[in-house]
Length: 272
Image (tube, rainbow, N blue to C red; front, side, top):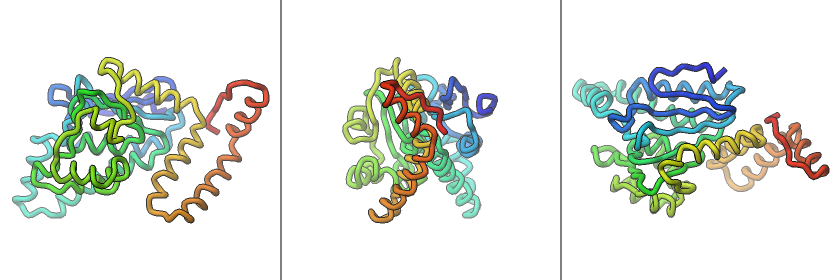
């Protein structure tokens, strides 16, 4: 049972069918470490087999989401690898961080990010890799890799971010590393909506719970199609969706919706 999992490098809770991941180093604005990267990756991979969790919320403790990779625990060791000419070690690190995004995309559960305060670097990537993003007006989201002399091409940003906010806007953020405040992020489509800071987590969990009460097999199929169809032409996408929908038509939830409509009732979905 996912409710029994005990991660060591972030907080984890399950209420009903909703799991909440809380990055919990608030004294340093919740930076990621090598260990938390790996444990987050492994957790999202395990979710593919978790029957008791139907949606996931990702948030940060305190007044911030995530400040990115820890300067002392990640950047310092990477400079050490550079000094040692350890290209293999650098590549192992960048592949490992990218694996977190792959795991978030491949897990069947919709992921809802609740973003307040600082959301920078790898934190912005985690928000980007989520399926839905709720923010606050005071949030600051920055893909600031260029500020440390790196490319904006990190953890799938050059592929995913343009699909969310458009290529021109993505290029501006990735070239400059500047921060978007919450209102701009909502206007550009990065945030689905803004919430008051004190209501943010509750709203994200409410959104996740509503999805968890829906036809979750069908939600997983929607998520799969959204990601897979990026590399398809329209004809291939239409055929893929025909096959996906025919599979969904074999579920009991499809029949439940029909019989509920006939009987003028609200359907109660069970995800099968």
